[in-house]
Length: 433
Ligand SMILES: CC(=O)N[C@H]1[C@@H](OP(=O)(O)OP(=O)(O)OC[C@H]2O[C@@H](n3ccc(=O)[nH]c3=O)[C@H](O)[C@@H]2O)O[C@H](CO)[C@@H](O)[C@@H]1O
Ligand SMILES: C=C(OP(=O)(O)O)C(=O)O
Image (cartoon, rainbow, N blue to C red; front, side, top):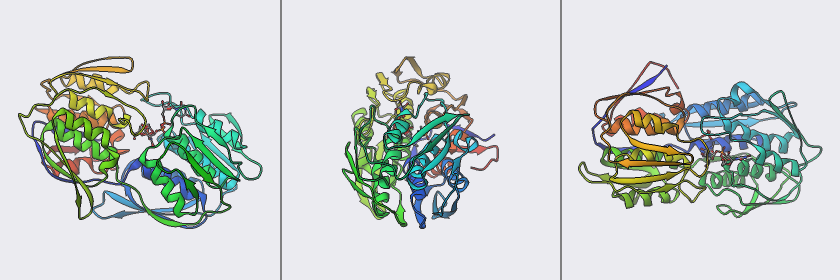
């Protein structure tokens, strides 16, 4: 099994090119099920989750191929889903990636039936799919759960609904948005999630011929059409990947420019890092917008409190990385996790590296600055892995991050990108993503 070996204590200097967003690419791939025409998606990150989603689509009868793009950190997908008599997303694939549930809405809308394995819980929380199923039932789907599978069917087209989600859910908003694009009538989705990845999916659907109003807001109005067509689309930059590298520089010091990112998607983090004492500047580059972060060695960080919330609030997917930063800040930082019930597993591993913190339910209290010292730590989930890498870049001596298959789900060439800015980090074990 691969692991990362890091020699910490070296500031990061140089440039990093941000890849396409995993969490935008996954729903966009699922959207290809909505049309028999070819869909060409570019700027997909070269990560395990993208390959898994392509396998899910292939299992559902889609002709799909992935080609490397540019420096190899990105991929292009060519997809065409001709038709499927009995579409089934199998457990073996769904269990490795919860976003597979996103095929349910498109399959029901286009083929009138679908069988999708229940994703089950995961390291960060129970993550039920009740909000997805309730809305689809209101649209006329008959849903039965048996033998670990969701069996869904609808006679005729799905019917439009005026629906207020009980809770803000990124995945449920995406699933129902896709279903509504081919439903009969005008659907109104209220209390919809507003994450930039939903805006990107909506833009793709509009290119495919969908009629959507309110993109980027909490109320989406979708007038169903009889057919969608193929198109080309480049997914947006990964705000969480960009945020992870910003946190790495904030914690380990240095001066790094991120190319091809979207600062507007990262306001909550940028504001926090500036208040903590980092210098952050934005400008238009040759290849999209750029962000530069500077914190020189010896320059003190101030502790700040953080509460994770749906967009535009502070993203839960950056909570672990910010906890690693706050171990280096002067004073007490209170971190409230407002989205998932079990997303502090990195805390104990950070403690093993010397962090001074404690957790209490949804709250973590971090006291800094702590002198981190390298040791072997175990990654428990995707963003926890990123937090441990950040802490390893700070820690004196050698840190070994184990179980990095979690990291490979969502970061394209992380160690290569960090090596490019002077980090001493190596992958050992020889496995491939
Ligand atoms: C592939 C992808 O885009 N993943 C992101 C997506 O996950 P995902 O779409 O799974 O997250 P949701 O926004 O749905 O989850 C938010 C909260 O709602 C709860 N919930 C959700 C659905 C449901 O039917 N019932 C229910 O109770 C969840 O348990 C969680 O507590 O948004 C999360 C929140 O920003 C991010 O951390 C994930 O990185
Ligand atoms: C939690 C994440 O992904 P997923 O929803 O696929 O588990 C993430 O990207 O941080």
